[in-house]
Image (tube, rainbow, N blue to C red; front, side, top):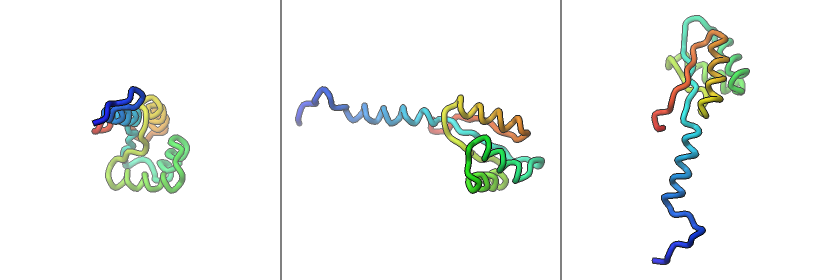
Length: 102
């Protein structure tokens, strides 16, 4: 076995770096289904607030409708919280939740 070189990272250090990177994506913006808002309004909101394409927003709206909720965005808490507030200000139910793997 060859001795470790001081400038090389040990395997456990590389793994730790990967884990720390994932922590930045530890939250999900969840949008909830309701019987009040139209597909068009939810789609428009996702485009304007979450910077989704029209196709992404349509797909998310379908998941929200059929599954009852859907994680429309992943990221850091503060950024998602601002989006969540903008969505709820439009009368659509939304929450920011910590991902299960975090």
